[in-house]
Image 1: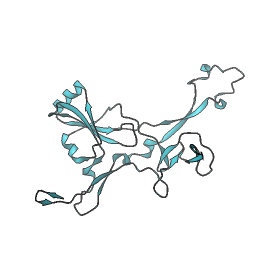
Image 2: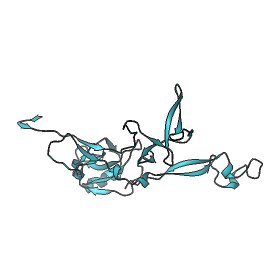
Image 3: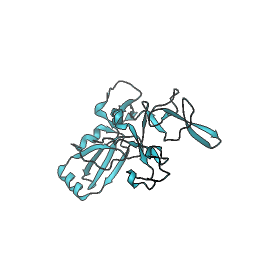
Image 4: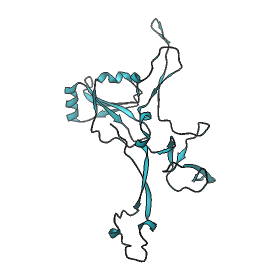
Length: 230
């Protein structure tokens, strides 16, 4: 490429996102149950499919999760409450790549605080749509007289920016530094109708009651640990 009188070489910098488990050909994503046992979707008849355990072919009626290092993973919950954050120079954005989302932030009190601070606040952010973690930078823009939040996925200060010829440079997304325990699923048995004690259940003392553990409405549900955003 030519810029003015200068001949320049361009090397793309790409962010490496969460690498989910795939089959041996590296094409199809793998799925597991809540315990990490492999499940697969098979076609029964044209237009009708069902989940089965991959090894035994026994039917699986639960939720199929995408697999990450052999463990079930669900979409990250949207960040709705930021209790702690970092205060950084607004210029931190110059070291970040892949600004995938920009938001207008409306808050008179925050606007005034950032105008006086003359710095940005940063924190980890997820939008609840998938498996991406962002570094959110919230700052007051003097030219626009508005507060903006920009979300980035890569940090140039954490990669080797060698000027030797290469096809591309890879920046690792922060999500790859998460502990597997932060994404682990756990399950519990609960009453389908929301009864929390035996005394609340109208079947207690009747011929229909054989105890919660044998009740058809005492089901297993899957819950997810909250991801730590800070």
